[in-house]
Length: 123
Image (cartoon, rainbow, N blue to C red; front, side, top):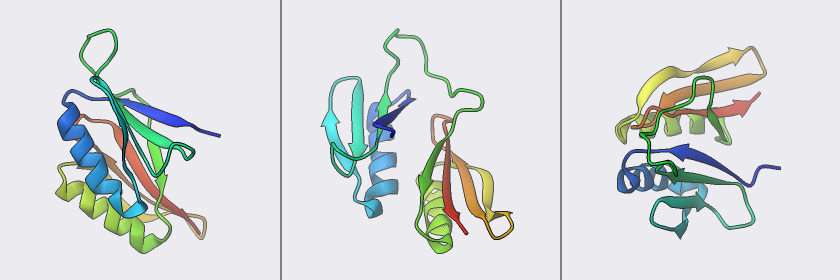
């Protein structure tokens, strides 16, 4: 259903390095790399994450209430993605843990530009 999600960033090289390092274990890589936007994912037919400098030339800023949620595959993987993101320069916005008993396990970070990212596992 989702083709791609775009996050505004201030430094393209830093953003591409952050997300390709963070999501590399899921098979993600830069698929299209243009001057002000790059698409990161497994392949062009799967959902992608795009990072870009804003088209209008204004400074980027994270949206209040906006978040990208990435399925981790297991609770252990949620923990691993969270810790890897922190090592890569993200900040904590909610440590890994069970959010809804027996239904939802998740962790939340802010990328180096302040965009909110969640890692989750149902169950």
